[in-house]
Amino acid sequence: MRLGNCHNFHDFRELARRRLPGPIFNYIDGAADDEVTYRRNTASFETCDLLPGVLRGLGDVDLSVTVMGQKLAVPFYCSPTALQRLFHHEGERAVAAASAKAGTMFGVSSLGTVSLEELRKAHSTPQMYQFYFHRDRGLNRAMMQRAKQAGVEVMMLTVDSITGGNRERDLRTGFAIPFRLTLGGMLQFALKPMWGLNYVTHERFRLPQLEEHIDMGGDAMSIGRYFSEMLDPTMSWDDVAAMVREWDGQFCLKGVMSVEDARRAADIGCTGIILSNHGGRQLDGSRSAFDQLAEVVDAVGDRLDVMMDGGVQRGTHILKALSLGAKAVGIGRYYLFPLAVGGQVAVEQSLGLLRTEVERGMKLMGCSSVSQLSRANLRFR
Ligand SMILES: Cc1cc2nc3c(=O)[nH]c(=O)nc-3n(C[C@H](O)[C@H](O)[C@H](O)COP(=O)(O)O)c2cc1C
Image (cartoon, rainbow, N blue to C red; front, side):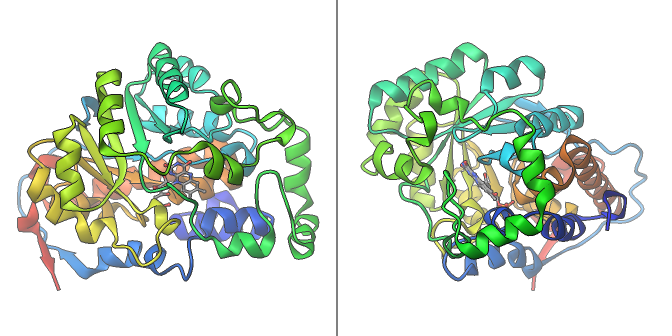
């Protein structure tokens, strides 16, 4: 199987499963506990059907949306994900470049492996900087200041991760930073030597968003310890309100799910929220963003931009989310498997496929712009 044979998410995932060492594939693919939420994320899109309109005299189709003050050429963006250079040596550089070519926004994780400044300089499409809330308030301020100076457009605080999810696939393989591989995990690396060769022949693994502020030197700080020691589980709405004021720009919360929290986000001045369960990687058994979308859009859709992510594998999934009122849709594993198997070229290929699927779907729905999608063209079974 090769890149040329990849026509959809499932093909890229299968290629990644064949090519990557088991611990890496399972870190990307896996989720928490019994992975119920992970499966529901995609299944929830199948609880409703699109109702097309015909004979609409369609000309060109405009896929662009404006979200959090940013104009995107397509209604989807690359959600921030950690450790991308571990999956492929081009890492965030590939994802940012492919996003820029697609005319869309990309997220850079606090646990990213290329600096947000480098990415900001290299591309002009909007960048989201995803960060976590640290016990050290000075550190939070310093990190925001740094993002502001770099010209980051959208600040994104992840609020569903005050503790790490229980990823049992990683426990079995020993995936952690630094690696604590089990014997089985080591064997799986030995079986896929190309990954190791690629890893050792490229630039050293770094976490540039954090290393300036935190002593990660010589792997002194593991990511597990970063979560348990540096992040602040007591963070409250008042803390976040202060950050929103300080940032004084586009600020969204990622991982809000309830109407009550969505209202509070609007009350403290957030300009967006992302309904998300972290791709099923945090609280297993929690609701899917798509299942929860209509309720939240109805409550706060006129006060801030509501986005969602989780389980998106097809253009029609995006059309369904937009029909319910999402302003844009985030993708994670959808671009990570291509990144892992082929770097920038493959991410471009996957974003191109998604764009084509959305465009084709819009035409078949009889819609020439995203604003024409509405609940009138959706029926729940
Ligand atoms: C390997 C991996 C790493 C991730 N790292 C982060 C992260 O550092 N920060 C964050 O807010 N979300 C992170 N996420 C969650 C994504 O931003 C997004 O919410 C999720 O992937 C969406 O689900 P999907 O993969 O089904 O599209 C990660 C997801 C994956 C799969």
